[in-house]
Amino acid sequence: MYYYIDESGHTGLNLFDDSQPRLYYGVLSSPNNLDVVAEPVLKVLRKILNVDRIHASQLGNGELVKIAPLLRQLAIELDIRFDLHTVYKPDHAIIQFFDQTFDQGVNPAVSWTGYWTPLRYPLLLKLSQLFDEDMAKEAWGARIELNDQEAERKLINVCSSVINNLGMMADPRAKELISDAMNWVIKNPSEICYSISSRGQSLQISPNLVGFQSVILGIHQELKSTTTKAKAIIVDRQSEFNRAQEYIHNFYQQQNDVHTLGVLGMPEMDLRDFPQVPVICTPGDESAGLELVDVYLWIMKRIIEDRSIAPELEQLCEDQTNKGELLISDVSLNAINNRWSNFFEQNMPDISSFTAEELERKEAFYEQDEARRKSHLEK
Image (cartoon, rainbow, N blue to C red):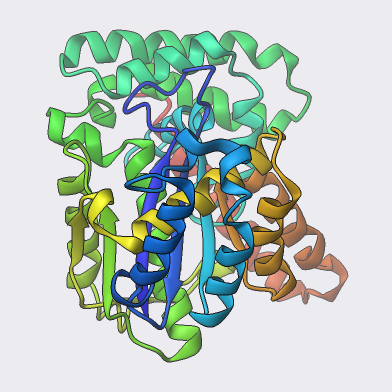
């Protein structure tokens, strides 16, 4: 399979641009090398539009509808598939805050089940309800702050604000866990290692890299399910993030013997047979595949944002849906809520089915973990 990857909505480390709150990655795939076999057709399409390259944002609905029928035919002939990966950037700031401050391996005031089991997701969602935009901005500012003292000052401010907002929370257990975690961080801010150490590290925690990680893991899962191999992974060349994209791809390549079972309902991590082809960073005006993914990505973005789109263009993405092939992966609090609400509805244990011995072991574990957790609150 050949993969062509483009992005839209890039604002770097600025997560709070109201005009571009979501980062999009589009992935076009085909068993054919689109840079070779699609190029003759694209020459015809460019001639119809009287352009050197097809840039969807410049052409808009009015021009693109002229080539929509030919694009549909091309997708059928070359077995083209389109996938979409998105990151809601304001949520990314809160998710990062949770991942750093509630990591039970670092913060001993967090319960074991509150971080290492699916119970982490309801806790994250309850925590997010205590945030406003200013708190999220300060949390992210602390995360990308290079000065450790300034980062810790901002971090303590956010933790204090979380505690001040706990009065709006009705769940006593969540209130206790969040309060204890935040108080421990306030007393031990340097233990969290919350801020980054370099500009290069900031790229690795950016929405761009979170989105790209979703892309390459999605490619890996697709290849595993179809037992096919990746022949090329082509990424639109841009100076800021290509090196970080190559880094994360190479990291997963080196972990291709890792297989971690999803214990207690947590997601499985299986990197076996991870694609061994490199990421190839190519200028968008030198790749027919990148030219095509730009069109699909522009269409899908307008559909998601409920902006005007010609029916002839919308049909291109509907074709993918009708084939059952359109994958949309979203990193957001709303997506987390939808996924894990369904999980808990389907997997709530029936307490009556437990034996007395099982209940005793569970209670013993809970009491032991609570004693461990609370012992650290006194320090």
